[in-house]
Image (cartoon, rainbow, N blue to C red; front, side, top):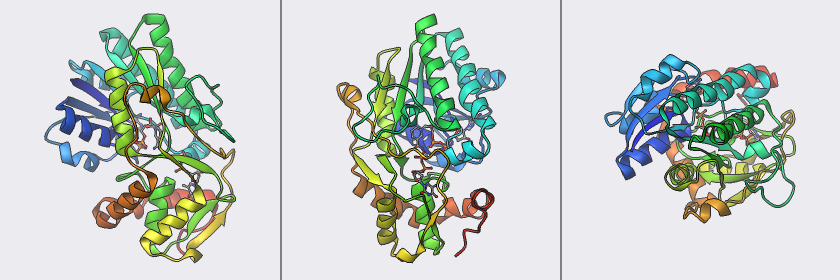
Length: 331
Ligand code: NAD
Ligand code: TYD
């Protein structure tokens, strides 16, 4: 299949492209603006098999240049970090809102199938039980609010124009090549370096962890088998409190518990996310990787791939942390 995959120089998109090239022989063009989170190194395993276009999804010329004779668009491009959306929300409306809209117009002009990669965060927080695709949308952060707006726009293109649009909502992903501003890679790298591990609030917030390859295959499933105009949840098999994730990382890296530091809670911090994935399971998808195994593999990957994270660790996320929390990451 000929695919335009936007935002695939990032964590999940690059995994998706690897899977599509290796397992399906797809002809892929990647469009990516190479923000702080996007790196061409993420695509190095498939670089000779794909076409790469540097450009932003909110730029109609860049989209037209990249789209070629694609049969479908899969959109990963987004500003993705909740903490950044609290500090600098406007970038989120531009990429997540306007960018999605420009891609949808390009799909409409050409009659292309369109898959929007979205998140469980559009449903907000849930104390008990799990969200289904018909649960109310109650996003809490500028990140999740702009993702919700994008989802609604995507679905409106089905209802209004009959375009084959679909939405795949994933729970928290983890795995190789995740930017070390998110909980798991940040904690792994800090533990390996002997830096503090900043746990927000009481550390009892719960996330529903999904190994990145499982999400990549879930999105592929929605692309191939999903019904236009529908939303599909794609949740991980396990839920875990943040503090338990951090303690397991300390064990796997051999670091000391004293590195844990409880810090000021995130503004508007969602307590728990949980997705029911029965609708996608009925189409034949199931997550394969349990959290204990996936976390061990992820720690091993960061241990073995310092070439990937060394340039990042010296830079942007540290400055961000210091500005936000008013203290250094060094112990
Ligand atoms: P990421 O931050 O690792 O990568 C985002 C990519 O988008 C980067 O390559 C970046 O350069 C690119 N990008 C940003 N703005 C752009 C723009 N204006 N034009 C073109 N490219 C742009 O993100 P990720 O974790 O891989 O997430 C990918 C998608 O999956 C996002 O839409 C996110 O909302 C969704 N999602 C993420 C998770 C998670 O746990 N990480 C869970 C569910 C859903
Ligand atoms: P994160 O990886 O930012 O994903 P999201 O907010 O999209 O779920 O955070 C996961 C959880 O970990 C969330 O409850 C916030 C918490 N957290 C910390 O306690 N410390 C940290 O340094 C980070 C980045 C996150």
